[in-house]
Image (cartoon, rainbow, N blue to C red):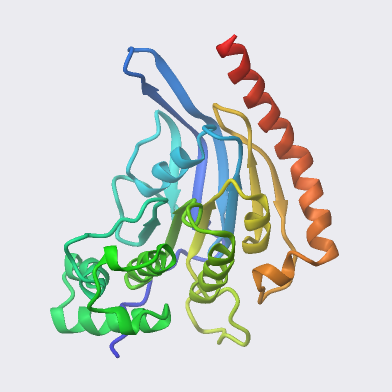
Length: 289
């Protein structure tokens, strides 16, 4: 198989992603101004897996849209590889909460779409797509349509759609939230394997895995996957605390959750996150009253 074009990586020491004093304000339908994130400072190293947790509606997803280039900051700066983000960039992959598939295309055609849009010849795009369908366990489903797949299978299509483009930056907005508990754990393990962070004995001369920003409401999921967990404040969001996760890799999500160190980390992070959740609930209750 012809491999994807090697990813350009920033010079050593330059963060893969950096937000400096980033704020984003929207106009509501009534004409009022709503600030989703304020004075946000966040850095993601090359090849680092960062999970972002925070209360519902605090601005986690807005942070992803700023990094992706789908939105511009109202104030501050967003950089990828030390360069300002101006519009959507080809080295950024985005896995959404909802399936971003073309319902009229087969599974193979859906996975081919990204390379084809980037100018890859049809035969090479098909070869890459078949390779990635094999990696996510869907080789036998290449001729199926999305409505013929289970929820977990559609998420595997979404992962193949993203990884086939060899992204340097991978943004994930609660990608597994709609799945049942067992399928969610399997997909988390699948993600770690595809990302490459769990590969033992990887060659030192290989390009680092993609830098990941993973938004989730599930604190256990965040700890099991990430190198560090970022806790956001009640909206407008800013970074409250950052917790390094030193659990060894490779990891299996279900087994790592049983480790005593995992439980200790969970308690520490929840003491910070729980306060912000309480603040958000109290604000909501006061508005209703």
